[in-house]
Image 1 (cartoon, rainbow, N blue to C red):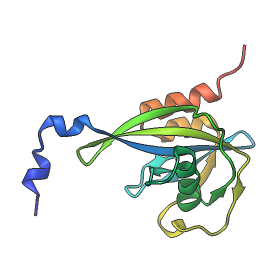
Image 2 (tube, rainbow, N blue to C red; image 1 turned 180 degrees about the vertical axis):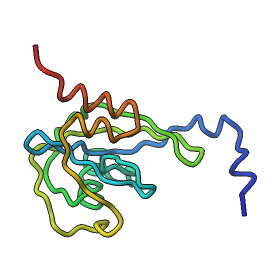
Image 3 (cartoon, rainbow, N blue to C red; image 1 turned 120 degrees about the horizontal axis):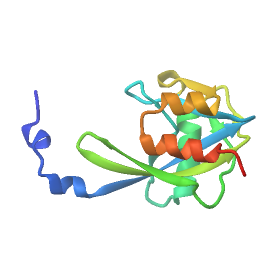
Length: 142
């Protein structure tokens, strides 16, 4: 049954942007991507729970969704936005270099994890701003 109130929400309800945090994990020049619940390729990311800093939330999501442990740089490398279920989200992205890769993690059965060359990662993700973030991170230094 379709919830008509949810489908026909006024546009101003979408004005609120939900804040999330995520990790762009890099190991030996490769980027870690995981599958979303809908089968799209994304980075580990999620809600910033009460009492967590964005950095802590990013680390938690990296472990829960991708089985990665490590540290992130204090300053985010950027952000990207996306829409889902009539809501807008902004993901603050932190860089995790050389993470420990765990063989078991909470969401292992529901997600795939891959390590890809940057160009392949850019090709697989759908969010334009995330593509730009990955591209910028791997741009040649002049």
